[in-house]
Image (cartoon, rainbow, N blue to C red; front, side, top):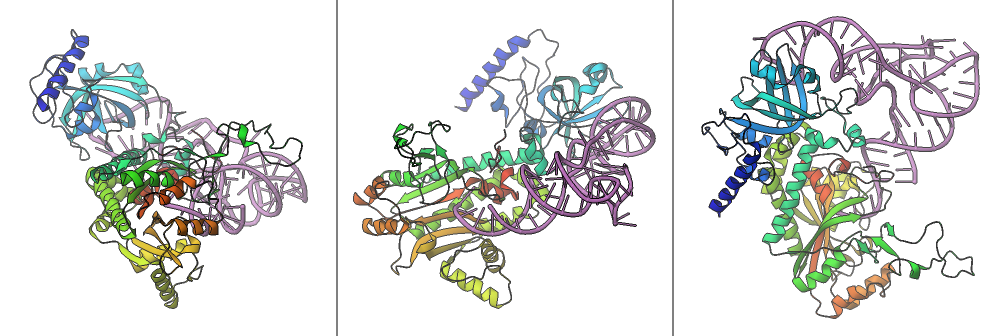
Length: 532
RNA sequence: UCCCUUGUAGCUCAGUCGGUAGAGCGGGUGGCUGUUAACCACUAGGUCGGCAGUUCGAGUCUGUCCGGGGGAGCCA
């Protein structure tokens, strides 16, 4: 297989070289160190990332690959955007980034040499600006500078797209995240957002990796729904009715009732706030399933932890109780942390240095330690003990009230100094579908709380007993007619099952140390903000 | 939605007691033989978020609206 794929690559090299035959580039001997080499084109290409260019751009080497190569006499081709430039009389240093790594490749043009003079015409020198896109040809050499092992001695540089310095909004200096949010179409070109984007991608793949290894099926739950999944929370309505002329149910009356029979779905429809109920359907057939997709909440939330559109991961397991649920949640989180610590090292070191000092060690500790597991009643006890010892709370802890943000912080940062799973909450403060305990007062819900952030996972064992579920729905004022299919799961072959939801952006916040959730999603949607 | 805070040059900010505006960075020009937050010199750049008011006079005081940030609630 390996042999076949290298044959395939060679043939692509050959095809592409036809286009450049007759060009001035000369063949070079096989260079030392890693890196594939083509006798036909004269270009040395990438090693670890070489295959990612094979389909259309066989000569180019990605920056990440260049930085891993040893110096050699053969010519290389790189493409990207200029991040910074420094120049003296004859020497021009500029750094180019193509998103493949945090680090840039430094290009050097020496105008005192013939090669340097011909690298770029004088009239184009000023076009080598921060932000401009360029194509570079040169030779990889050992760098005399301290900050990089290798650099590119440029024999030719072509400016593909200019970025006029007087109008380009990004400067080669640190910008505030608030400012970058206003230019979200350009912020991926910064170190921080490049790193976030790569970590986000890595985590998404790690999510699938974990569940696929464990035998879960990925279920594509609907984005449009006609049921309100939790009986609470504002939803975005989806309609094709003309908003300036809404058809009334009874044209003769002055009532505001709307004739939804004339709407697209024949009844009110919304953007989903959770795929859980749909996931339960598939869990009671395929046993282990998960969802991973966008979720929408129309709440007027203006905090650093809330988005109107975010991505959520919701596993759902049949024949699983709250104990199993906790085991999976903990193993899942640890898998994600391990993945980012091992595969995202370069980016994590950036976050450790610039965003959240000590985060690598903190996450490493979480991977190695057992999550604390306490009941809600124990949590209240801990908080009351803390209050007795002098901790000032804005909200006094009391059994029956929900845990406040300050309480979650106290538990994770002061008492347990790490992730804490809190279970068995009073039924009044949790959703109708959570399984009622034998005490009749608490439900088998669980929240995973982490330092800095608070709740990152919310889940529960589900109520699988038809009568109990019906009673809970009645208490919550939910109509059985809307949830008939959900109740059917309890009527036919019901089974204990459990699941949880992980906010993907909150995970990224936790892992990177980024303080505002708007900075870990490419295009944040929040109240009064849907630009880009 | 509520509480606090903030809005001044392209960016980050200073601006005292009410007297018509300043720095650093970025930009431009020139200089510099290896820079890497490059350095040195010169230089351009402002309807002080909008509207209304108090005052001889408002960046500064008052009201109001809009935007940003932090916190709370809702949650993931």
